[in-house]
Image 1 (cartoon, helix red, strand yellow):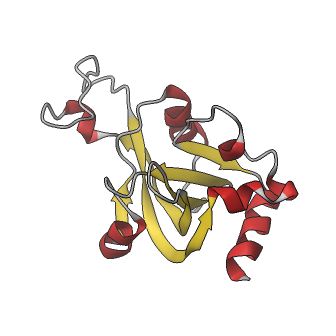
Image 2 (tube, helix red, strand yellow; image 1 turned 120 degrees about the vertical axis):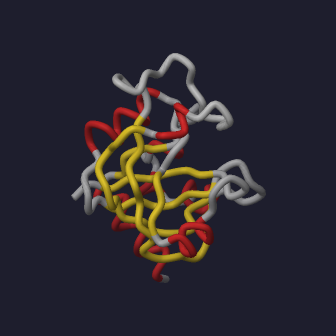
Image 3 (cartoon, helix red, strand yellow; image 1 turned 90 degrees about the horizontal axis):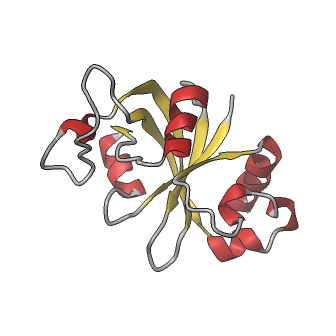
Amino acid sequence: MRYWLMKSEPSDYSIDDLARDKTAPWYGVRNYQARNFMRDDMRVGDRAFFYHSSCDEPGIVGIVEVAAPAHPDVTQFDRKSKYYDSASARDNPRWVNVDVRFMAKTRLVTLDELRRHKALAKMRVLQRGNRLSITPVEPAEWKHIMGMIQD
């Protein structure tokens, strides 16, 4: 099993939306490296922290599980979608998404709180200039954060 951190703007799709829906496609990723993580590395059963970004208090707000392997992101073909990509072809889609399943809502673990823990210093979400919406989380980082959540 691998671990991940997946960012979403709560105004677009929040942990509460996923709690309501139970399972949802992680659509709209338009960064090649993040797409490659979903396409090449994510497997059903992997776990991820659900992270609210671009909001008043960014941070981890829940835990999700990868519920379906990478498949074409349908929003790339929808002309009305903000994620529409005119260069993507149905027979050779450029963008994929995995489906995620709600596991738990957690207390908010803010970005500032994550930064205060030396054990997390190398975590990708904490690196200067990191803008990726999906990043790997090392097993030791996962364990450390799970301990923080349960305290």
